[in-house]
Image 1: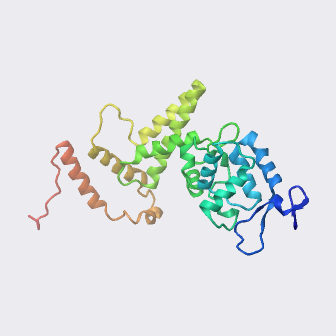
Image 2: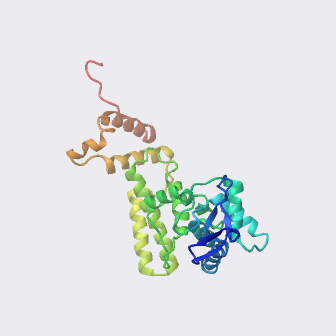
Image 3: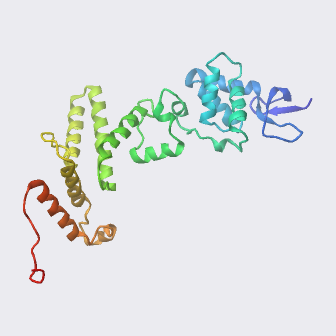
Length: 289
């Protein structure tokens, strides 16, 4: 029986000490680079501190095997039914049965950083997100980490649905408005954390920030519930005030709305008449009369 070299333990062993690489369809078998005992050692070295998923992820990386979320879910379910000597061997079997032929580790669909959190089924938000969605999440909100430097998923679980609550009925949402709403959500999260800390100064500072953002977005009138039409007009007014070009050199940035001021004014006049009961009408020229 031929022997193979394991780069982890620097030993040459019989091939039955290695996991067969199922991708090879030729008559001559090939094997994963790390021997079974070293692969199991890698898994076990991670379990105590980071959990089983970290161990299997590490073993997959060194053996050039992609970490696939659906395959991990099947593996985890199987392992929960009883103790298994080699968890990675179970994962690799499900790779063959469910995923099929792979090219290499670069096909992994599990995000590299904080992978233990990403694959933790107790965290539904993280579990349902792809690596691309994580990158977009950081682009939209920045990175929230706790004192240990770990990703604070609790923050995103608050921010994302809160932002959706604010913007789901907003007509004509611009980039500037979107940024302001995100700032408001982050300010509210800051207020929550300040409340938890009990720091009076931090609480006061966070509350003032929330109030200012509510005022800027015209969301601070709690006395009277406005109609949908009034809210729509407020948004239009806010949009014009906050996004119209202030300098001549900025006009090109707003070419999609420039030139429609007269139509906009007519719409606003009609809205005002409908809501307030006013009777403002455009002047009739002599030719029209």
